Image (cartoon, one colour):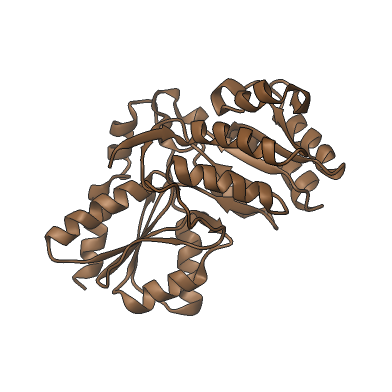
Length: 312
């Protein structure tokens, strides 16, 4: 797979496209637009861009007010800042009144590397999933990010979109034409084991599937870009039609994609499962590749878990 743009870059470009289609779209920035790439929208539509400084709680409050007036605000900051610092405001000003605010968390996961644990959003998806009414999307590459940004702009209600700083491999060479909120994308067919992943772990899931194929095992790979609402039908089919499921995500093990898939399978069709995620710990400062290896977020770790299930 060739390397593509960082998902934050794709988000910034897509936001400008969305702005051209939707005159009611506005942005509210917390003085990090150069990092989240929201600055691209501000350059194109300065009259629809608002700066509140480094004040995430106020950022959310202003966005909720704009949504109450009929605007479609996109707000972005580092994932850990926007979700952890401003959680109460998201709860009371956005989720509870069901405001049409689109929240974007950039620099998510441990792959931001040298910035260290204080900057790493590893709880953000769980926090977003905990907010009633929120749609939660974690795209795998630049094309899926563009599709997700457009889809969220066209949808009604609060949403969280997770993007990252590092360049990501291109998964969708044709531009993710089948992207649909709430529907997993089948990237590879297989009957021995299913690998369900999102974000940067999708590319690693495909690498693991290639390695399994060399061993004579066929892995189904699902890009579960939407954590909420989850594609329960895809999970049930995977549980029924393969020997079990491996879930891979760049997030804490509890409360996000793995928890959602396990709950879905438990209700509809229990199956053996393994989880590749950050195991109840914060990471540290370091190079992204070294951190992903140390904390078990690589194709090799997915391969080992899939192999266990396939040989049951």
